[in-house]
Structures are given as C-alpha cells and as structure tokens.
Image (cartoon, rainbow, N blue to C red; front, side, top):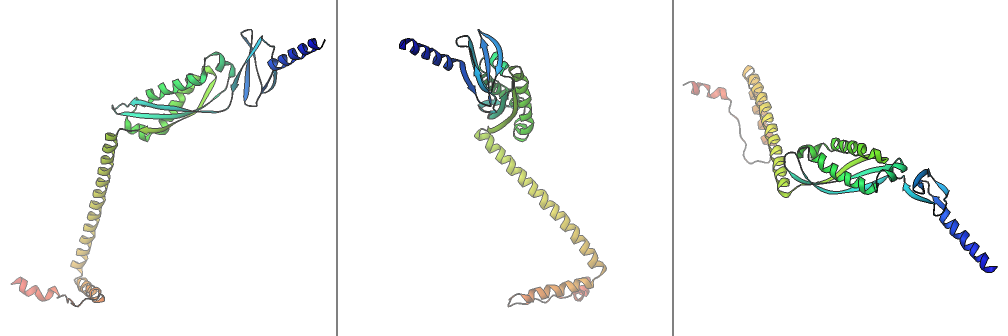
Length: 246
C-alpha cells in the first residue's frame, strides 16, 4: 500500500508539473493540441493536458533590436557603413508562431536587407541630411513585410554612418571652402556698404565745406587725448587753393 500511495503522489506531481503553466502579464501562450492550434491563452494560470497539449510562449513587450553595420554603396558610388536600431512588438501571437519559424531572426535579416536597399538608392548628402525621411521609409517597408507575421514595427532609427577617411577629408575641405566663400561674401558686402556711406559723406562735405573743418577739429581732439609727444595741426585746404590753381 505505501508503494501504491507513493506512485499516486508521483503521478499527481508529474501531472501538475506538466499541466500547470503560469504566464506573466506581457506573455501569451499559443496552445497546440495534437499539432493543431486550439487557442491563445494568458496571462495567468493555464492548464494543459499532459503529452497532448504543447504551449509556445510569446512576449508582447516592445523589442529593441540592433541592426549590424551594413556595407552600402550609395547612389553616387560612395562606400559607407550604416547601422540602425528597430523597435517592434508582437501584435498577433498566432501568426508570430505559425507564419514564421523564428520571428526575431527573420525580422533582423529583413531589417539588414532593407537597410542596404534603401540607403543604396539615395546619395550621400541625402543620407546625411535627411535621416528622418529615410527612417520613415525604412519603417514603412519593414512594417508592410512583417504585418503578415503579426508584428508591428513602430520605429526605425539610423544610428551611425561610417565614412571612409578620404571622404571625410574631402567633406572637411568642402566645408572649409564654403566658410571661406561666406567670409568673402560678407567682407565684400561690408566694403560695398562702407563705400556707399563714404560716397554719402563726400556729398555732404561737398555741399557743406564747413563740415570738413569740424572733422579737422574732432580729429585734433582725439589726437590730443592720447599721450603723444607730437601734436599735428591740420592746415585748411582753402589756404592751399591759390597755389594749386597756379
């Protein structure tokens, strides 16, 4: 009798260990009965029929997956390395288990090929300046391909673009030349404005000669304010006019 009781206890423990499953709030269980899907259960306590029922757990939490660096040749034939990160979650556990063998691996491979394809269709300047547009295009393509798997791609972000050393030097020279061009334009604009002001001042002095005398006095005051041992006295041009006419 004691042996029989021990056997009963062992069978009960085996049954409970095989039949009872506990799923967390973010988990769902796809139940297979003799190879056929019968339901998706969870969260909480799940009771299975030992040997007959099998359960595959699927997490519904947001997954952040890093896309390894991909060698990309842009539209203008520049070789770069681009990596990204994608955020997605499982929306339909049944499709995530039935439609694809390993949805994490499949999503990673699809993200890599899509990243190379999209970045290869744009020029380098657009790849560097229009990150948001490229991110939106990547998200749209990935979401359309993963929708049959029950997966929703929410965000795709291009993280880093690694340029060759020669391209970095060429871009640095281009940026330096652009800064020099802007400096020359600003300097020329300043010279143009200064010349206009000088022309206006010459017109005023021509109409009012006494203004030149006032300027002489102002210059003399500025010179005398400094600690100089030599003082210059300007001579009115009117005194030299008779000699210039001769």
